[in-house]
Amino acid sequence: MRVQEYSQQVEAFLAELVAEVYRHDAGLKSELEISPIYARYPHLYARPAVDQLLASREDRACRYLAEFAVSGFIANELRELTEEISNSEAQATIEWQGDRLPYRQAPITMANEPDLTRRHDLERRTLAETARLNPLRAQRLRLAHKLARQLGFPDYVALYDTLGELHLPWLARQIEGLLARTRARHEEDLAARLRAGDIPASEATTGDWSFLRRAQEYDSLFPKEQLLPALTRTLAGLGIDLHAQEWLHVDVEERPLKSPRAFCAPIRIPQDVWLVIRPHGGHDDYNSILHEAGHAEHFTHTGADLPVAYRHLGDNSVTEAYAFLFGNLQKSPAWLRDVMGATEVADYLALNAFTERYMLRRYAAKLRYELELHRARDLAGVDAVYAQYLGQAVGVRVWPENFLFDLDDGFYVANYLRAWILEVQLRLVLLREFGQTWFAKREAGAYLRDLWSLGQQFTADELAQRLGYQGLDAEPLIASLVEDPR
View 1 (cartoon, rainbow, N blue to C red):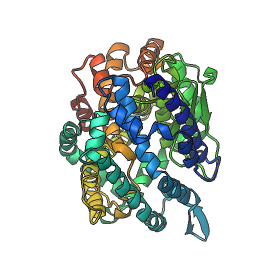
View 2: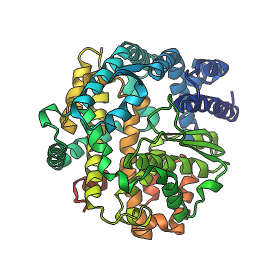
View 3: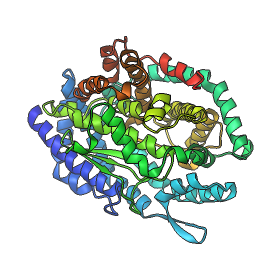
């Protein structure tokens, strides 16, 4: 099959697949049905197509298509297990306080539960349901590892490091520096916040972290009814009219089966993009909608005439960087003042800095863990490694039951870390060129639209070079994590 014809089929396939995932995760249908979609496009990920594209990686577009074909080949082999796991999660309930709580509702309920005893009880019940599905998750992971070797790669790590150009050895060195240099500041802040929340340090868990992050005391700064207006005002400052974007759809409706995790569903880029959120209150809703808006604006401004490989494929670190850029507006005193009308924000900025530091340390530890997980000969004892690595990094108890639940395919943890690095580099350029209120400058909007129009033609490393750097540089990110936000 010719590359152009193959690319057209890729776009048609992705439109169907993303639309199905959108409907399921948005709570519009109870069961995820991706097998029929894969059955309609078997030629896209058949071994002859995969082998042909793997042999044609000198061309940039073909490199991206090869990564798609390999991921599709693996996903197709895993699809029945993927469906079973996802559908089981969507339909699962937890008996709690005399009622049946949807499994996917549990994280939201936990974050809003002020009573430590009740919160820990719900956490234990949720973990039991997570553990029930771990044998299926383990079966799926073992099959993915086997498929990576069948494709001629030494292991799963080598497959995604090579095809995704993730530079994992370099990234692993950077995260060790991040963990070392942020440790003292994180431990100090965590201890203070646990004391303020009357949470004994010896009993603190990830459920308590979700409660601390929820930070209900700041709800008055981030009212639920202002969620969409705040996004509208933010985009207007950049010269973008949210409600005039016919290609962008915002889904904020409450549905029982809707995923608690906000997401962006680019069904066709740039013509059909969905921003989906299930609001549960507070500043985290604002972070979620801003983050997903960064994706959505990137996708809706991607050049329609770009090849499919540059619109739908490529280095996802790039779109994640745009998402972090928007989400991190909550760290800006100027944005809090001009968009949210908040002036007494020193305590909130300190919370935001603590949250970001926690998340970066968590993802740094996740990369360490996943490198070990995907090279392990078997899964015996890996759950303990997960709990150890992440627990040491974040300072609260991390549950081994989550060792496979807390896992994205294809080393997406590396995409997030690379995106955090790129975002700080991009933000420094915007601050230098347009000032502290860059989010209110139409010129900054035009600058971003020019970058967005490139889609994902360039990797994060290449985009950093276009911004004037030698490449990705973790130093600005690490420095921002140890400075005083006040």
